[in-house]
Amino acid sequence: MMDILMLALGFAFFALAIGYTYACERL
Image (cartoon, rainbow, N blue to C red; front, side, top):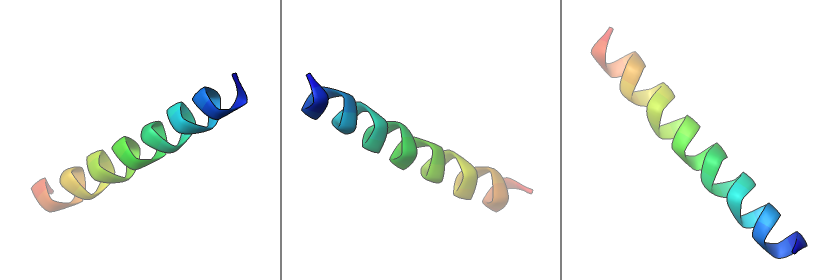
């Protein structure tokens, strides 16, 4: 259970970083 939680957290952080950089590129 903990592994799935950590994996989801890592994926969310990765997606957030991608979205943040994409937003900065657009601006």
